Amino acid sequence: MQYCDKKEKDDGMQISYRALGELKQKMNPAEGVIKTEDQLDVETLLGILGINRKDLVIMVNDHKADVGDLLRDGDRVVIIPFVVGG
Image (tube, rainbow, N blue to C red; front, side):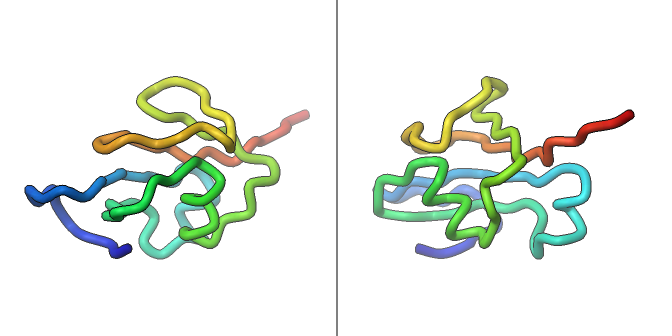
């Protein structure tokens, strides 16, 4: 598994991710592409990125996702910290 800057043609799977809010400062890089030969679910991706899944909203291709959802080649994952205001 590796990080890459742009889409390359091969048999592997590439998943783009982007962190929003306070996660942008905590993650380095805050956005990028993961290239893998392995099937990943959302929870595994978060682990690879070193993110605790607690208090997060995960969107895959503009739809809310659960941690067990499988990711597919070309998916766009947005990681949003859950914020409570008052």
